[in-house]
Length: 500
Image 1 (cartoon, rainbow, N blue to C red):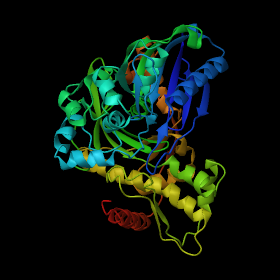
Image 2: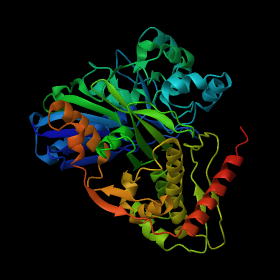
Image 3: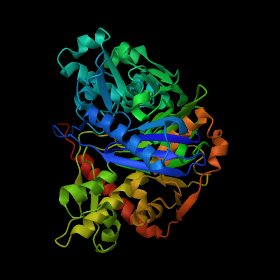
Image 4: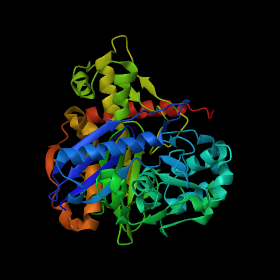
């Protein structure tokens, strides 16, 4: 049993990758599923679409690899975090579509919690801020808006889970209701200091304890898949939220190491070791991973729009047909124009945390066209990363003396143009690894560690290989001018918030 199957359930697609014992990839499969936008700022998924697409890609990858269930030592799951499912304990039917992490419908609930002075205790216990991003207020919204749901939850008839938990429950035929510490730490309901669900938080947000899954290590015996799914039972022994899984896949096991993942959004994590550090710059303190009952913590900065800015160019504006066209198109832009896109399509994440503002373009001229818009969209991701980078360096005491390199992964890292611009604006090296499937690799590693396929973390880190290092080559004057223009654009967007 020398193979590990990684399930990477993302925001726009479900993926499955079969890894060999030497971490090379034997096969992969991917399937997109529908997105639902029932109102402005609302984003939903049909849980059944998530489930069926996940099973299909797993079967496809196993078949492509030419193996069977008996060859697979373990399954690891990584998932879009904070996306919330509430389902019936008896029938398995979801009572509402999954509310996606990007969804902003609970902004009023969050505003009330803040007005009631709840943020200090919530932040102290969870390491998070009060924002619609996190799962807790989404659960409360479902309980309050689905007829009879709150009463059913109080009677123990309903279950809550993030996507990993929902998939685990389905994979095990309804036998296991569990999650790991990384996903639990994103709910507003979990105390990251005690490693437990917190009764005070549950009461504040209004979520019955009976709905909650058991919290385990990220590498643990979670259960096994029912034999009918993949032709035999397979142990499920690794779970981590997608950004934590990418941190593990990037082998960021030492304090001070930092990675940034570019998918639908962009998420930067900096390992801060075994003690949670409080940010002074609105970064989140989160669980990076939990092994053998010991938690390792990280700073996290979340940007809600990265790859989805490229999707907007393709699907919203129709100026490209494929994402790969964006870099070459940006290269043709007029260097005399300074067009800035602040892609606050669903509000702004770290370090601003304003759910009410919306996106804007600055610096448009009569000559602004597709090339300038592509340039602005790609550059917006780099500018937002700079904001996180600056906040992390300010919060992390040893960052000024450390030789800081950013390890990157995710779909957008395929764009050399974007990665070079990122290095230029950060004024620091950007390292792209040979294996860019780092999120899936992290899930596979956690499962394979438990199954005895992969070694302990420091030995696993020796397998990390550099594919390309992007070195900064922009003049300081140009960098400062461009960053000043971005700061003005952000200020303009934030000023547009009238607290509607």
